[in-house]
Length: 201
Image (cartoon, rainbow, N blue to C red; front, side):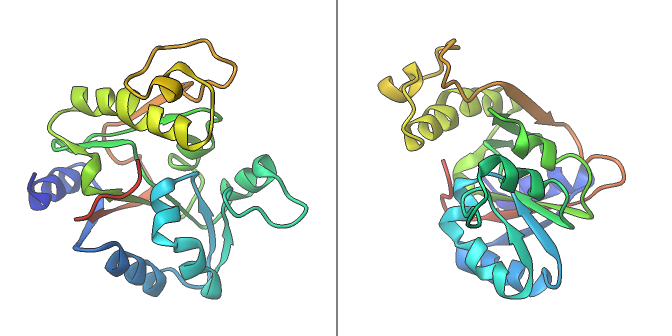
């Protein structure tokens, strides 16, 4: 799928978009452009793979639920992430037509991506790209969510069987809120970083 086509679709929906060939180039760009800020992370395998916590920490105060400070837990750290200058996250799927989709269990990631920050940055690998919104929703529920549940060591049907969503009632279910970004939110500076490598789940 042509990155330039996805870029044009996202720009038509109000986003600023940059394309990078590698995660290393994208990480270097973010380290150059985000300085002197408080930065919050959504709970993202993509950001973890890129090493962005380490890359941004020298010049910013970074809060990441996957790097909780001593004496702090996930909930406290994730709450800090909601009040930062900049919020970084990924999405579970991105349609060629420019719509993005995220699924969340606790709500910290989708909440942080909508409001309250000076800037939100979505970092998306090429493996998240699909032709249509319907396929983006399908990928989110049947590929990304089972992989994430398995990564977290949960005992949900999707994690144990690894094949699809079972719309379960497990107490460990992580699929509680499905968000479709139809366009950029009003009054929000939002940027999408497209990476021509497979990133995240």
